[in-house]
Image (cartoon, rainbow, N blue to C red; front, side, top):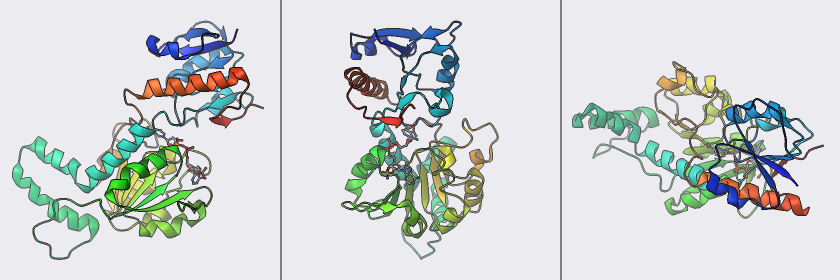
Length: 323
Ligand SMILES: NC(=O)c1ccc[n+]([C@@H]2O[C@H](COP(=O)([O-])OP(=O)(O)OC[C@H]3O[C@@H](n4cnc5c(N)ncnc54)[C@H](OP(=O)(O)O)[C@@H]3O)[C@@H](O)[C@H]2O)c1
């Protein structure tokens, strides 16, 4: 019988999603003995999964519960097939992206700061902040307290499962969409990554939603940040290494751009790191995919992949084919 190891953190009611014909093996994070399993479902938190791995024997297939699996190939080696849970956190990550775009254009972090200070008059800091970050010094009355998303140009870097959901959720705002992926496509038009530098200056908002790979490391570096419009917003919902952190800190400190980050490099972001005190920056601690709906979605995706594996059908979410 196929032995499927699952993390003890998985809620018991989710186990009924898996086929009855497998033996489910509960894996503790603090294992003190080795276990033979055929299929491994690692904990969604890499640090926990990494602690379990040295005790696992015979693993042929890994069914990850997350979309981003860049940490798995080095851990399990090239002989093991790895599938991700593409789609499991599309909704939460896309909603996070829309939320931070609106929060930054509506200057919510500043207003929250004002709320906590209990001083209504501080609202008049906003017009000056607007001029400083956007460079828009036209005489405007009444004073500018927030900005509109509608009609802005959004550059989506990564047009996969989550990228498409971000576009769907942006549709009511009638934004101008520019899409980038590895290769060019039409209907809708997707630009190849080679055209990135020519697209950046056209964008008011840039969203990163690509996997972390050797090719995407520092996709956004000093030259790309320099190409961004004054005050444009960089949103990183992907992975920290997609942006060169030192270059980002420099661009933020110079008042050139704004940014919203769910992911950072390094991660966790250490106490006292320069990013914590950068202006025009909103940080969340890698929570974009973590809604109550995530685990049931991820388990359903893993269980469907397991059924395909058992019946010899092609697997759907292979990120590494075991050699
Ligand atoms: N913040 C969070 O909590 C959170 C949650 C979930 C996921 N994520 C991150 O989001 C990533 C994307 O997830 P997904 O499910 O949308 O993945 P996906 O469906 O595999 O889509 C990835 C997209 O990135 C593009 N891409 C890959 N390499 C590229 C490169 N070198 N240059 C330009 N584009 C490239 C792909 O291009 P092609 O279409 O041409 O293949 C594709 O459009 C995950 O890998 C993960 O790191 C973060």
